[in-house]
Image 1 (tube, helix red, strand yellow):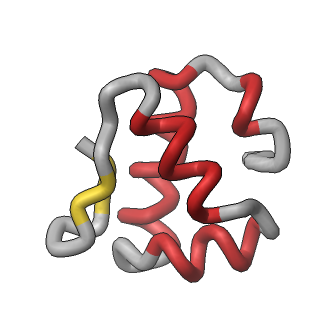
Image 2: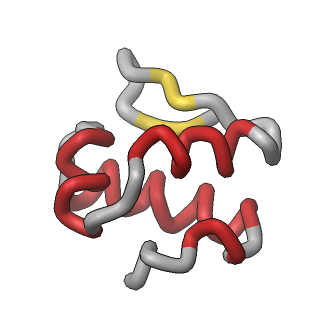
Length: 63
């Protein structure tokens, strides 16, 4: 998966990909995911928020 172009990805696909990676590879840690893929965490959160998805730290996923 390449998240470097997340700003232009379909937001529903992005939502699914990010949640899958958070669950399978990063134990819900968004900081680790952002560091691993070298993406701006705040920009990723904003992109998904613009599509109606919010990050829930206690759940370790976007909903």
